[in-house]
Length: 59
Image 1: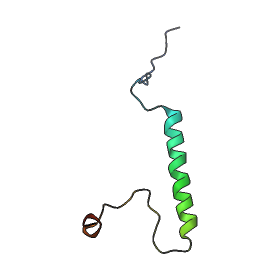
Image 2: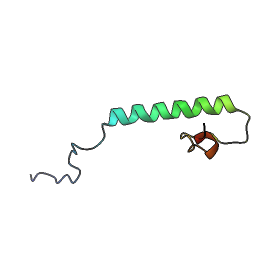
Image 3: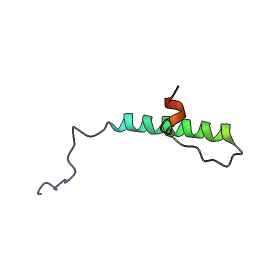
C-alpha cells in the first residue's frame, strides 16, 4: 500500500505547544484575577498595559 501524504510536516521553528499552553494558562489566570479583584466594575479587564501618558513621562 502506498504511503499516505502528510501535508503537515513537523515545523522545527514552530512554538513549543507545552510552552504556548503554559503561557496561555498564565495570561488566563492573570485576567481571571483582575476580573475577580475589579468586580463589580464597569471597566473591562485588559491583559496589556496602556502606553504611558504625557503626565507619566514628565515624572
